[in-house]
Amino acid sequence: MIKIENLVKSYGRKYALDGISFHVGKGEIVGFLGPNGAGKTTTMNIITGYLSSDSGTVEIGGLDILDSPDKAKKLIGYLPEIPPLYPDMTVSEYLNFVYELKGCDLPRGPHLEEIMKVTKTWDVKDRLIANLSKGYRQRVGIAQALVGDPRIIILDEPTVGLDPKQIIEIRSLIRRLGRNHTVILSTHILSEVQAVCDRVIIIENGKILADEKTDDISTAVNQNRRYSVKICGPSRDVLSAVGGLDGVESVQLTGERDLDAHVYVIESRTGIDIRKQLFRLCASRDFPIIGFEAAGVSLEDVFIRLTEENKKRRA
Image (cartoon, rainbow, N blue to C red; front, side, top):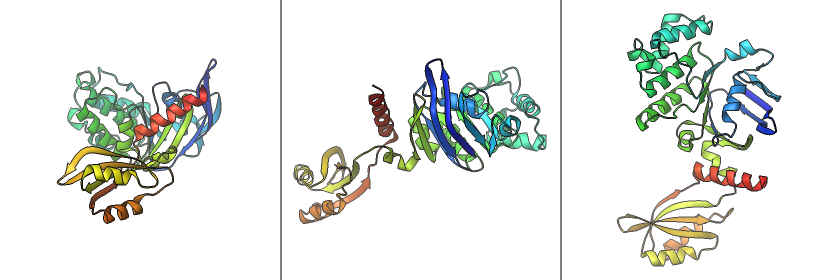
């Protein structure tokens, strides 16, 4: 649905985007993650045609955004970081205005009613936008992006400034939108991506550092394997025995307990699978294992590792 190739945008000597490329397929929810100033909003603005690039191409549904701007833009619904709302209009008046502005030809009444019900703004349709909470204003912003039933929804920092309850509600809405739309979610909030996205693209200083499925993001860095293991037995003896296994980088007692079992985080060296020998060791020492799961690598770990490595390369 979206194809970006070698996109470059500079302001004087500073590159906001430095030759980035990525594709987004139909039905994907992609998190575009990076710190403030990384180039996220610049990318969103170029994709939607609000901003031109110095070089590179953007295709929306097979249409070049420069060669066929009107047709390409009809495929996109966009929520900027600051929603483009008119506070002196009611929700219903505003969405009717957007309907006219977009030249929408879908049945007006049923279409707008469906959008308001999907975004849960139907109950406030006759209220002035100025009198709505921030969470509801954000919903109205998403509602305007849905007018015309675009195949692609682009959301720039959709939960900034919301309280925890509002954040959960907006995340739930984004997941529902992903059933019928391709969604790009630009954010600097790590938990946002893990909560709703199928795939994550990490950008910093105008360069893409990683592009992976959310569940596989740990492959973006050369990271050791970590396991959370519940083992019965004297903790001092378990620490000594497990710590002596070939390939074990570290073993830590977390302080958590499950009856007579302690919880340990065991980290193996890169490329070494310690699971079989760990089971054999514990069986031979009569240390029953009653729980075992991959601790994995958090998105925060990956993000910090990648940005630190990028800074070292630039130094």
